[in-house]
Image (cartoon, rainbow, N blue to C red):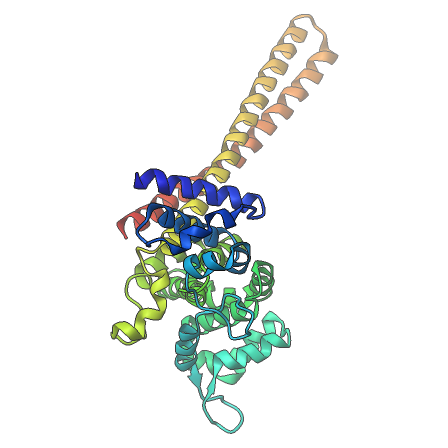
Length: 371
């Protein structure tokens, strides 16, 4: 039963990833000599493939005996440092470097590569605001445009922080201000909003392109961190699906030339998971804002009940001619009414974003489903 085998492989991979990949693989060494169509071989292949999507490739590789490592480990691209570590998508970076050539407004006037220049700046830990000034003063922003500048900066940051997800986060946080400078037009409406949406999609394209076809799921992790750090909105992922996941812009139509982004094309596991991340983020935002609105509504009702009780106590005191108590209950009732009014304003303020977040989640789901 193929479905049962794949479900068991999924469960086993999850189990192993939670227990330091501890498993007596040597007792499965005979699988390496089997035909690739044999159920045991396919099962082990599925387990290893899933492990590579939840753990770093080197950890999985080191946990396997030599015969199984040679037979089952996917042939992902590796870096040139000789350590067998997962590498970046060199063909994407080469293409991006070609697309970011420009003539600096100062100096000799010879063409230079924006990706290489940014790499030098990032190695010196240049602050985010200085990066923006470099784009302006060098003429790169004017010649390349905001969309390509944002894609280049994202790719440079991820290349510089490729060691681990922590380095990813550090670099993305450090230069989130510069990336926001390019995408801020999205909030202004009109033509600027369209440019801002394209910038967001280009940032996602850089995060997915840098890891496309190399280590599995790193493209998903990179995009997920961009959304979590609010460098881009989930709507940028939807825009990426529409403009990058199907047709790759700015490259040759030749299949071999454009194949370097095939790892994140629509239909791959990475593309599906990236879309799911966007929908999940929207749903989480909708639930959070709806929770705030519901909490404010609950507190408003409690304040109204307290105000009604204080008003009833005031009327009782008035009937008994207890003037001091009457005035005290009247003040209490008014205080509760004021609280109820404040909670109603809070609920109204949260209700709008909650409804908007729900609509955005539905649109993101529709975009992923329609894709």
